[in-house]
Length: 258
Image (tube, rainbow, N blue to C red; front, side, top):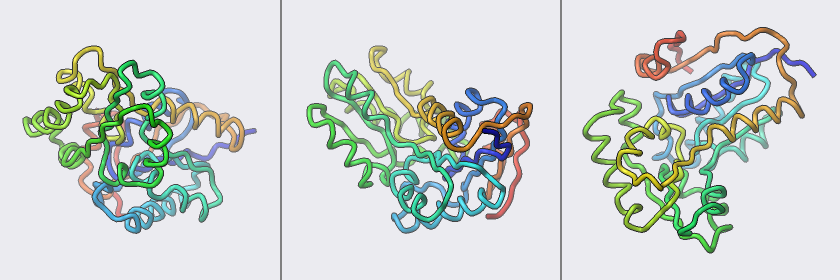
Protein backbone atom coordinates (compact mmCIF):
# COMPACT_ATOMS: atom_id res chain seq x y z
CA UNK A 1 0.00 0.00 0.00
CA UNK A 2 1.43 3.37 -1.08
CA UNK A 3 0.41 6.82 0.08
CA UNK A 4 2.59 9.83 -0.68
CA UNK A 5 0.61 12.31 1.41
CA UNK A 6 2.32 13.83 4.46
CA UNK A 7 2.10 12.90 8.12
CA UNK A 8 0.67 15.77 10.17
CA UNK A 9 2.01 16.56 13.63
CA UNK A 10 0.69 19.27 15.95
CA UNK A 11 1.45 20.60 19.40
CA UNK A 12 0.58 23.61 21.49
CA UNK A 13 4.03 24.91 20.61
CA UNK A 14 7.55 23.78 19.87
CA UNK A 15 7.68 20.85 22.33
CA UNK A 16 6.17 18.34 19.92
CA UNK A 17 9.30 18.62 17.81
CA UNK A 18 10.73 16.05 20.25
CA UNK A 19 8.05 13.65 18.97
CA UNK A 20 8.55 14.79 15.38
CA UNK A 21 12.30 14.08 15.65
CA UNK A 22 11.65 10.47 16.70
CA UNK A 23 9.21 9.98 13.80
CA UNK A 24 11.58 11.58 11.30
CA UNK A 25 14.47 9.43 12.50
CA UNK A 26 12.48 6.19 12.14
CA UNK A 27 10.71 7.18 8.90
CA UNK A 28 13.10 9.54 7.10
CA UNK A 29 11.41 9.22 3.69
CA UNK A 30 7.99 10.27 4.92
CA UNK A 31 6.98 13.86 4.27
CA UNK A 32 5.89 15.63 7.47
CA UNK A 33 4.02 18.83 8.29
CA UNK A 34 4.51 20.20 11.79
CA UNK A 35 2.12 22.72 13.28
CA UNK A 36 3.11 24.77 16.35
CA UNK A 37 0.14 26.57 17.91
CA UNK A 38 2.50 28.71 20.01
CA UNK A 39 0.11 31.64 20.05
CA UNK A 40 -2.21 29.60 22.28
CA UNK A 41 0.42 27.81 24.39
CA UNK A 42 0.43 26.43 26.98
CA UNK A 43 -2.64 24.22 26.60
CA UNK A 44 -2.17 22.80 30.10
CA UNK A 45 -3.82 25.80 31.78
CA UNK A 46 -6.87 25.81 29.48
CA UNK A 47 -10.29 24.21 29.95
CA UNK A 48 -11.16 20.94 28.25
CA UNK A 49 -13.54 22.79 25.92
CA UNK A 50 -10.81 25.20 24.85
CA UNK A 51 -8.35 22.35 24.28
CA UNK A 52 -10.86 20.45 22.10
CA UNK A 53 -11.62 23.58 20.05
CA UNK A 54 -7.93 24.38 19.51
CA UNK A 55 -7.18 20.77 18.58
CA UNK A 56 -9.97 20.75 15.97
CA UNK A 57 -8.62 23.99 14.51
CA UNK A 58 -5.18 22.40 14.14
CA UNK A 59 -6.64 19.23 12.62
CA UNK A 60 -8.64 21.25 10.08
CA UNK A 61 -5.42 22.94 8.93
CA UNK A 62 -3.54 19.65 8.58
CA UNK A 63 -6.40 17.94 6.74
CA UNK A 64 -6.57 20.92 4.37
CA UNK A 65 -2.90 20.16 3.65
CA UNK A 66 -3.77 16.54 2.70
CA UNK A 67 -2.28 14.79 5.72
CA UNK A 68 -2.85 11.02 5.76
CA UNK A 69 -2.63 10.62 9.53
CA UNK A 70 -2.26 13.02 12.41
CA UNK A 71 0.00 12.74 15.45
CA UNK A 72 -1.28 14.71 18.43
CA UNK A 73 2.20 15.49 19.78
CA UNK A 74 0.84 17.06 22.95
CA UNK A 75 -0.02 15.18 26.13
CA UNK A 76 -2.65 17.74 27.14
CA UNK A 77 -4.41 17.64 23.77
CA UNK A 78 -4.28 13.83 23.70
CA UNK A 79 -5.67 13.32 27.18
CA UNK A 80 -8.40 15.95 26.74
CA UNK A 81 -9.37 15.86 23.06
CA UNK A 82 -8.35 12.74 21.17
CA UNK A 83 -11.66 10.95 21.78
CA UNK A 84 -13.56 13.91 20.30
CA UNK A 85 -11.16 14.08 17.35
CA UNK A 86 -11.59 10.39 16.55
CA UNK A 87 -15.36 10.77 16.72
CA UNK A 88 -15.45 13.75 14.35
CA UNK A 89 -12.77 13.01 11.73
CA UNK A 90 -12.30 10.04 9.43
CA UNK A 91 -8.50 9.93 9.67
CA UNK A 92 -6.19 7.93 11.96
CA UNK A 93 -4.95 9.76 15.06
CA UNK A 94 -1.96 8.84 17.18
CA UNK A 95 -1.83 10.40 20.62
CA UNK A 96 0.71 10.59 23.40
CA UNK A 97 0.18 10.17 27.10
CA UNK A 98 2.60 9.81 30.00
CA UNK A 99 4.43 6.46 29.86
CA UNK A 100 3.24 5.27 33.26
CA UNK A 101 3.09 1.60 32.26
CA UNK A 102 6.80 0.97 31.51
CA UNK A 103 7.82 3.00 34.54
CA UNK A 104 5.45 1.18 36.93
CA UNK A 105 6.27 -2.26 35.51
CA UNK A 106 10.03 -1.75 35.82
CA UNK A 107 10.20 0.19 39.07
CA UNK A 108 12.13 -1.54 41.86
CA UNK A 109 11.08 0.94 44.55
CA UNK A 110 7.45 0.95 43.36
CA UNK A 111 7.59 4.75 43.48
CA UNK A 112 7.61 6.74 40.24
CA UNK A 113 7.38 10.44 39.46
CA UNK A 114 5.30 12.14 36.77
CA UNK A 115 6.14 15.66 35.64
CA UNK A 116 3.29 16.93 33.47
CA UNK A 117 0.93 19.81 32.81
CA UNK A 118 -2.14 20.51 34.92
CA UNK A 119 -4.35 19.65 31.93
CA UNK A 120 -2.80 16.20 31.58
CA UNK A 121 -2.80 15.30 35.28
CA UNK A 122 -6.42 16.40 35.70
CA UNK A 123 -7.66 14.51 32.65
CA UNK A 124 -9.92 11.47 32.78
CA UNK A 125 -7.60 9.48 30.49
CA UNK A 126 -4.56 10.03 32.73
CA UNK A 127 -6.44 9.10 35.88
CA UNK A 128 -7.86 5.94 34.31
CA UNK A 129 -4.33 4.88 33.36
CA UNK A 130 -2.91 5.71 36.79
CA UNK A 131 -5.65 3.65 38.51
CA UNK A 132 -4.35 0.53 36.76
CA UNK A 133 -1.22 0.59 38.92
CA UNK A 134 -2.55 0.43 42.48
CA UNK A 135 0.66 -1.13 43.81
CA UNK A 136 2.80 1.76 42.60
CA UNK A 137 3.02 5.11 44.34
CA UNK A 138 2.76 7.79 41.65
CA UNK A 139 4.04 11.20 42.66
CA UNK A 140 2.44 13.79 40.40
CA UNK A 141 3.94 17.22 39.86
CA UNK A 142 2.49 19.98 37.69
CA UNK A 143 5.31 21.67 35.78
CA UNK A 144 4.00 25.21 36.28
CA UNK A 145 5.95 27.65 34.13
CA UNK A 146 8.19 25.15 32.31
CA UNK A 147 6.42 25.25 28.93
CA UNK A 148 6.25 29.04 28.95
CA UNK A 149 9.98 29.35 29.64
CA UNK A 150 10.73 26.96 26.76
CA UNK A 151 8.35 28.81 24.41
CA UNK A 152 10.01 32.12 25.39
CA UNK A 153 13.45 30.76 24.52
CA UNK A 154 14.61 30.54 28.15
CA UNK A 155 15.53 26.86 28.10
CA UNK A 156 18.76 27.20 30.07
CA UNK A 157 17.81 30.11 32.32
CA UNK A 158 18.36 30.29 36.10
CA UNK A 159 14.56 30.39 36.47
CA UNK A 160 14.31 27.03 34.71
CA UNK A 161 16.95 25.45 36.96
CA UNK A 162 15.22 26.77 40.07
CA UNK A 163 11.80 25.44 38.99
CA UNK A 164 13.18 22.01 38.12
CA UNK A 165 14.97 21.71 41.46
CA UNK A 166 11.75 22.69 43.27
CA UNK A 167 9.70 20.11 41.36
CA UNK A 168 12.18 17.22 41.42
CA UNK A 169 13.59 17.38 44.95
CA UNK A 170 10.41 15.98 46.63
CA UNK A 171 10.41 13.11 44.13
CA UNK A 172 14.04 12.29 44.93
CA UNK A 173 13.21 12.35 48.65
CA UNK A 174 10.26 10.00 48.03
CA UNK A 175 12.68 7.45 46.50
CA UNK A 176 11.46 7.40 42.88
CA UNK A 177 13.53 5.31 40.48
CA UNK A 178 11.67 6.42 37.31
CA UNK A 179 10.71 9.91 36.18
CA UNK A 180 8.05 10.05 33.46
CA UNK A 181 8.01 13.20 31.34
CA UNK A 182 4.35 13.88 30.63
CA UNK A 183 4.71 16.80 28.22
CA UNK A 184 6.33 16.80 24.78
CA UNK A 185 8.23 19.99 25.68
CA UNK A 186 10.02 18.33 28.59
CA UNK A 187 12.54 16.13 26.70
CA UNK A 188 14.40 19.37 25.93
CA UNK A 189 14.97 19.65 29.68
CA UNK A 190 16.62 16.22 30.03
CA UNK A 191 20.22 17.57 30.16
CA UNK A 192 19.25 19.83 33.08
CA UNK A 193 17.10 17.19 34.77
CA UNK A 194 20.02 14.74 34.69
CA UNK A 195 22.15 17.23 36.62
CA UNK A 196 19.55 17.26 39.41
CA UNK A 197 18.53 13.58 39.59
CA UNK A 198 20.75 10.86 41.06
CA UNK A 199 22.20 8.63 38.33
CA UNK A 200 20.05 5.60 39.18
CA UNK A 201 16.78 7.39 38.34
CA UNK A 202 15.73 6.64 34.77
CA UNK A 203 13.90 9.17 32.61
CA UNK A 204 11.15 8.06 30.23
CA UNK A 205 9.47 10.04 27.46
CA UNK A 206 7.09 8.95 24.71
CA UNK A 207 8.98 9.78 21.50
CA UNK A 208 10.19 6.35 20.39
CA UNK A 209 6.90 4.63 21.26
CA UNK A 210 4.93 7.19 19.22
CA UNK A 211 7.27 6.77 16.26
CA UNK A 212 6.82 2.98 16.33
CA UNK A 213 3.03 3.37 16.54
CA UNK A 214 3.14 5.75 13.56
CA UNK A 215 5.06 3.13 11.59
CA UNK A 216 2.48 0.49 12.55
CA UNK A 217 -0.47 2.64 11.42
CA UNK A 218 1.25 3.38 8.11
CA UNK A 219 1.87 -0.34 7.59
CA UNK A 220 -1.61 -1.53 8.60
CA UNK A 221 -3.96 1.26 7.54
CA UNK A 222 -2.55 4.17 5.57
CA UNK A 223 0.45 3.23 3.44
CA UNK A 224 4.09 4.33 3.21
CA UNK A 225 5.47 6.82 0.73
CA UNK A 226 7.45 5.44 -2.21
CA UNK A 227 9.35 8.67 -2.84
CA UNK A 228 12.79 9.80 -1.78
CA UNK A 229 12.95 11.77 1.45
CA UNK A 230 11.59 15.31 1.31
CA UNK A 231 12.16 18.27 3.60
CA UNK A 232 9.64 18.64 6.41
CA UNK A 233 7.42 21.71 6.55
CA UNK A 234 7.08 23.67 9.80
CA UNK A 235 4.31 26.19 10.54
CA UNK A 236 4.01 28.45 13.58
CA UNK A 237 1.49 31.20 14.38
CA UNK A 238 3.78 33.39 16.50
CA UNK A 239 7.43 34.43 16.50
CA UNK A 240 9.30 31.70 14.56
CA UNK A 241 12.72 32.34 16.11
CA UNK A 242 12.38 29.90 19.03
CA UNK A 243 11.19 27.09 16.74
CA UNK A 244 14.04 27.85 14.32
CA UNK A 245 16.48 27.67 17.24
CA UNK A 246 15.10 24.31 18.47
CA UNK A 247 15.49 22.99 14.90
CA UNK A 248 19.05 24.39 14.86
CA UNK A 249 18.10 26.40 11.75
CA UNK A 250 18.16 23.23 9.64
CA UNK A 251 14.71 23.82 8.16
CA UNK A 252 12.71 26.90 7.18
CA UNK A 253 9.83 27.85 9.45
CA UNK A 254 6.71 29.43 7.96
CA UNK A 255 4.89 31.94 10.14
CA UNK A 256 1.18 31.69 9.36
CA UNK A 257 -2.03 32.58 11.18
CA UNK A 258 -4.29 29.55 11.61
